[in-house]
Length: 176
Image (cartoon, rainbow, N blue to C red; front, side, top):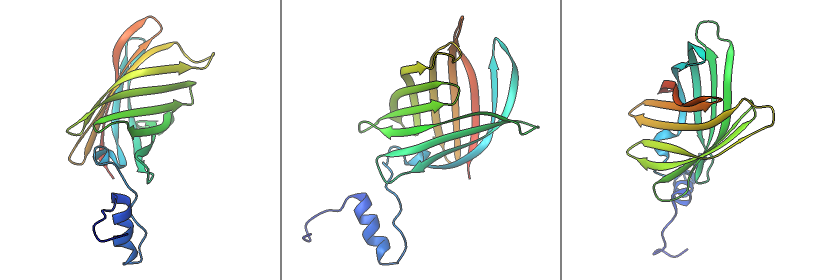
């Protein structure tokens, strides 16, 4: 490489850290960087067809060295610690400031959402919702993620069976 060439962030990190004999930090697209990391906190759930509930949650957006973050979420009932819900997938950059969230749930759903990344917030609209034949009748999901300082908040809306799109979950987590 000649002295006029420029290095990508992944290469420049590797070059800088190889001199210190430490592994390079994985590349993270700058628009997704605020979301990267491990987050722990609490949430509340409500829906017209169920009793309100509280939960604890751990979310991780893990760097992969590629232009996406691996995503996982695990929730537990507040108080008892009983496992409630889990999901995993990827948060990826699909344009300069557009993100796509791909989610798989063990309840038989896969989701694809897209939205603009603006000042640490992603308003995600559903592109595809697929369900296994015996999954519950969920018809639509919408999500919003926001990072401010060391706090991650999110909201989720869901349309289920005969209930139209309704706010269902709110979470507030802190960077671990």
